[in-house]
Image 1 (cartoon, rainbow, N blue to C red):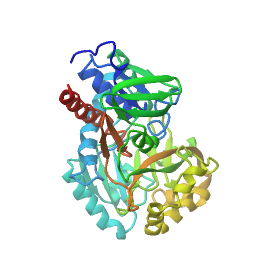
Image 2 (image 1 turned 180 degrees about the horizontal axis):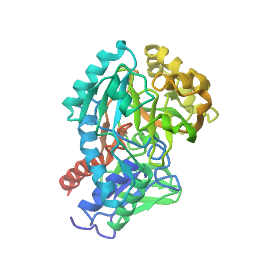
Image 3 (image 1 turned 90 degrees about the horizontal axis):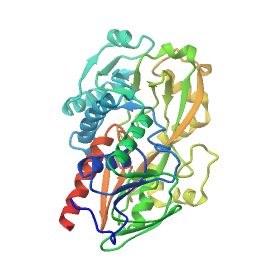
Length: 408
């Protein structure tokens, strides 16, 4: 692929967002097409500042997702790519397995459904009873469980650091502290105004996460999808109580709500995360109740959000109550591990999930992408987006390459 002349735009591709999906896309482009001039821009001073660095650090297996979905396909492929990449680059990770626990007979039907779905997705798992569950997790209460062998834990910020090095080694750039203020797509280029100066490129990739819909709107994408930021709050088990959890412990999720419920996960650093819940954030980067953007709050009373609230008001009330009551949060943990006491839990940093909502008030369950005249836009890539990131990056790179070739 030929280099552009000096009179052409500064770069061939500009990628907005230095999270794991943006960096994976840039690394794929650098690896496949090193003559391409690629730049990643991000308003933060570090990579993985938001979703990519504020999650539970789990490598997902693909057990939850509809077999014909992009999530199922990209999670399974991305998981294998991620494990291989970590091994090749010395990034801390471990395939430790997890249990998805039915705590009562009422949940056995949903556990059956998960078992069928996981099997259809090629996940290595087995149905186990209380005896085997106690061998794996001695302090867990449950009537049955799925033992998912493929799940694990990883240092996602470390993955992002390695990917950024790959981008630079392939001739690309990673420009941090560079906020996109505006952009304009012309028939042959994208002109971007940033806090660190203007950038022009032939093509745009939007991996802006919590601001993906904002960047897409700047590029003229017509869609009814918009980001509804959902804060996930965590607590940690105090060090002297970490023995209560061996690996990863999950409840059977509510199939009508695209969140997995409060769970317990061992981290790559040896800690034990409990959480997250899922509450509406009052700002795009609202990591607590005190961070409020009045412009964003006004969008929380529009028709799609009202429809969502009417549909899930009981669940929403439970989640918000857990946010304000450590005791209620502890109750959710004790459904899985009864020995956990309120005093065993301490507050940990929260994350905010970039969850897409459609115009009918439905939370978008699958990954979602869109094209503009000169760009590819990632409009929904929540969990398992980090696990699937290398596969997502390759898919975006392939999608963009087809358009570059067709345009040339």
